[in-house]
Image (cartoon, rainbow, N blue to C red; front, side, top):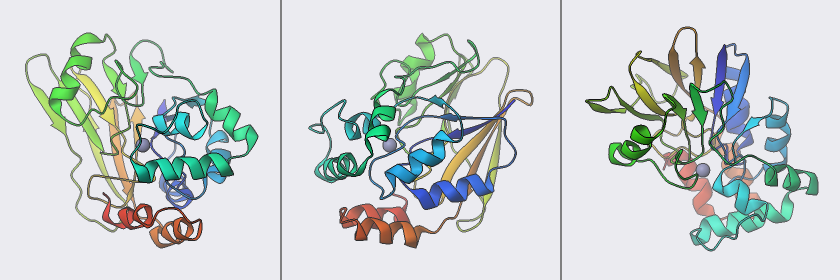
Length: 250
Ligand code: ZN
């Protein structure tokens, strides 16, 4: 089975369209949350991802934008974007967002889990090996996919050593891929990166393909029409910063 892993699309229709056009063949799609928030096309993005399947975990922006949680712990820019999203979402999409599952979910049995933040706390950011240490020690599942940080890569341990995994790419302006071979005794927290608002210094849309037969996770970066996404953010009246940061990948 080949799984297309998507996370943190954040209402960026241009990035999602480019990812789906570039993705090699896959059997199913697992979505790690934050479908909406920040970008200008929440309804269009929800329509598109719902066509791709029904394996989703909810993100903190999915909760805030559907009124399940308030925006008091969001920074002012994220809060403005969440309120704007609430106002433009159709009722059907609001209800759909409210019904997304809290992670972890196990779409393929006990070997693999999907979460937004951490298997121990859906809102936790796993940014360092130190952050990943506790979940990797405490949970049974060996392969865990997460999002939330908007940083592609992840963390691994063989029980003795601990590793940060960072895909290595040769360019910054083409479609690029990086294959990770999963090892038998390894335990993994793996982040496909953010489709719609990368924060790892690479502006290209991020995703990954998990192949359970080959035991690989292949990370991808794809250029997209970032100027159109920026224009849509500005003409929607969303904060300028949300447009600027897309080209910086920050
Ligand atoms: Zn996010």
